Image (cartoon, rainbow, N blue to C red; front, side, top):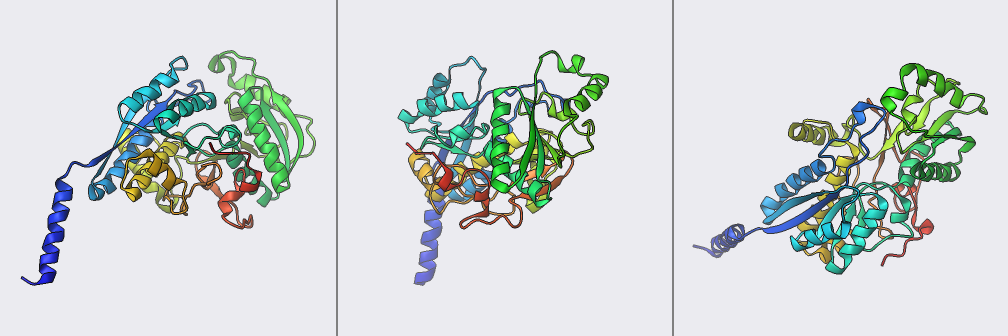
Length: 394
């Protein structure tokens, strides 16, 4: 037997030993709080397994690679109510060996989870909260973000409206704090890209049961009154993150104008109608397993799980410190069926990503739009760029 054959046999023997060894198990916690189930349309009612389903499909994909790298990825689910103790849930993850966590929580509770996990060396990926403060003044070195910020979503829509020459906006916002935060993102986007908000209006949430108190007749009378006598505008931009009124605006405004924002043309990280760049393959796999369409929160959790999986594979490690360092480093990239590689902004640990603009049936466009240039990455035209950030990672 010659030397080359001996070397080949030795390699096969070593490979067989590696395969025979127990796989390196990477445990990922899924910390999630159910979203509001009262929506304008029953088609938008959150699924019981929203977020978890995306993480589980991501684990399946990670395990496909793990067969060759001798790694095994597991999810541990922790559904919470608004009254459950966050720190206690984080401690349970740590005790179970899940030092990597995908979190779909309100911003204040996400910060509590991140701070509770820091002494244990835990790394979190925010897959749900769009709040700017999590990426800016309240940023943390152990908190990444697969969910786009409100600024990224608003900028994605603004670029398209400006590209269409629809520069005059009537901004109608809701009366809740999150609606004001979204409205502020649209104000910043208008200033950033050269649009003009000709007037702002507030639609007050007076409460009541939406199904019983918002019948067709009432809504048909209410929406024209709420939008009449406005200065000349090209498009109505709705800031209604609370999902109180925006869904009633299309085809009911006083003036015949398109609606965008929280209804009509909506900016999202993912949409069930998206099928470009191989997206149909992911959609079909999700539907086969969970018997429902893949929505944005599912896709953001899937992406978070793939981020952990990619970093664990490249570092051959389950160590949170090594995984975080790789995700924040220059060599990290992830494919997510969006036409280009996604990377992490090192200044605030936000995942760069295109923004889809959908009408509920199809994808109308994808931002960043042609002509919006950047010296480093056109994806950095969406959201706070490095010179604008207030984040000081600690």
